[in-house]
Image (cartoon, rainbow, N blue to C red; front, top):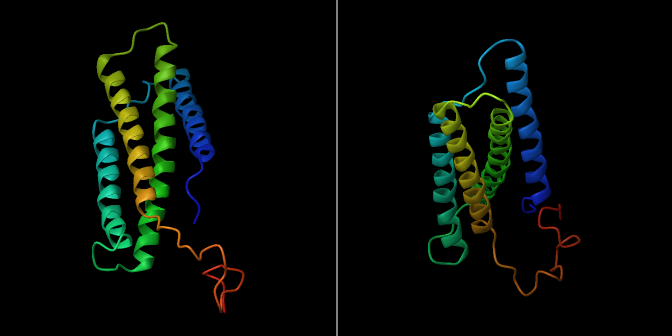
Length: 163
């Protein structure tokens, strides 16, 4: 598994911002109120970041030999959860950024409540991406000295290749 590419996160932010701006534009054009995230959204995003970190810490301890070994499939699942969380955090952060851009480009001053929850969502998304990327790095193992050379029975050095 490769680490999360910063370009993927940047694309998720740009796409999310476009969707957020477009949603508010469509809602306003149809005469409805703009979209305002509920206050529980940033709370849940922050809790997701804490959960991903909490799940990754035992993987790090096991990979360093400080605790009992864990199931490798569990470690991969946690790493994939961290990778998915970083992409979701980037997309949701972009969505919140799009909402903020829409509100700031209007001649009417936005209400403090709607703007406050949007800012809180953006901050929680940044925290989620940071926690997810940290968790992803915690789930990596050290490179052994013989990782460059395939061992006996290895097909091209790929550990998942059939023997």
